[in-house]
Length: 115
Image (cartoon, rainbow, N blue to C red; front, side, top):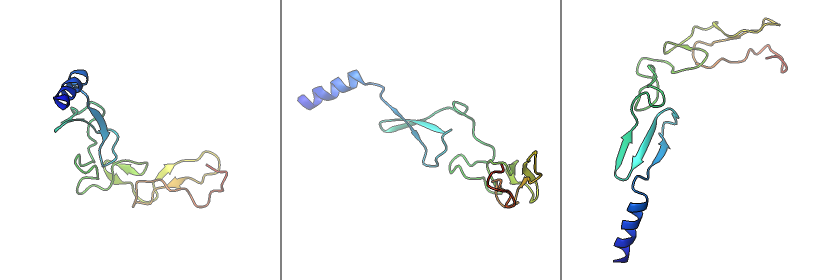
């Protein structure tokens, strides 16, 4: 009798208790609301709509695509090697894409104080 009474009280006091979680993919834009024995996915556009380069299940680049985002990623493809990804005003030592990553690597000829 006591356990049934406690469950009834808990359900009366906290009937819609749920929690938000971040998906295992680590993508903070895709949230789900979790209820007991039910997972309700928020509607598309609730936070941000799915990225066109990203597989919504794995949050990895779709098949045939190279990247999702980054200074050296455009239209789901890596920019060509030698494309300027960070232009400097003073010394002309720009940073360039490598053609194999979406990151913008620092020019190795720059000094520590340059940026």
